[in-house]
Amino acid sequence: MADDYADEPTLDALDAVVTDWLAEQLAENPVVAAVERGEPDERRWYVRVHGEAKDVYTIWFTLRQRSLHYETYVMPAPEENHQLFYEHLLRRNRKLHGMAFCIGDEDAVFLAGALPFHAVDQGELDRILGSFYAYVEQCFLPALRIGFASRFPTA
Image (cartoon, rainbow, N blue to C red):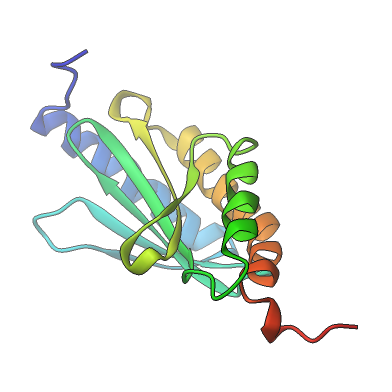
């Protein structure tokens, strides 16, 4: 619907939901290493996550008028095997829910998605964080080995 956007009181309430959920995650979830807020005039949070395949990464949550946008930097553009690298990520996209691999600034690879503002709640936020963790863990090393193959010794 074209007029489906959140007014200021709704955005304030959603801001509180995200802020409270992140405070809980920081206190109780060992994967969440740090949480920072963006500039005072923006509704953005930076969530530092400890992974295994990729040691540390940051997820940006940005509350907009129509949606909660979320993304993380995965890796730089591949140095080699470009076709196989992008084919790998496109095939992985078919199995992802609520986010997808995409190309961003400087041709870097990001994992990003959005949730309509009216669907933002703690359950969805849990799903998003868990999905980021699972997808980065599953996809990072295989993509790295394809796009930067000459940096990995062969057995």
